Amino acid sequence: MFALFKVDDVHHAAARKEVERPGPLVVPSEVLVETLGLLGAQMGRPAAKAAADFLRRLPHVEFTHATALHEALLIQQEHPGLSIVDAAVVWHCRHLGVRAASFDAKLRRLASAF
Image (cartoon, rainbow, N blue to C red):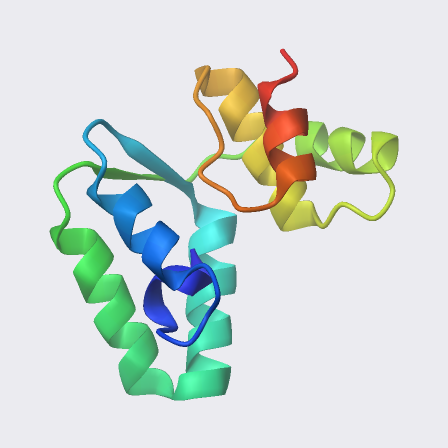
């Protein structure tokens, strides 16, 4: 998600295309918090606020707030090196039966392993 808001990111153009795809885009709260925190730290608080406002205006973006943290921690234990945020994405994708909108091939593979 960070690449969507950082124009010099190598994945920026692809992230823009991803967010324009039809259908729901499920954003776990962990991803939103991580993205806004990074944007605030690297680009300033106004950039983080603008990103949050942009996402809230998109009708197909759905924010989830109830991650099964225990399940995400189990996924993280099974896959050393996976961050808790990425483990939460894997859990959400498996739980909701959706694909991971990620440029990380390992994350996409884990998320699609039902």
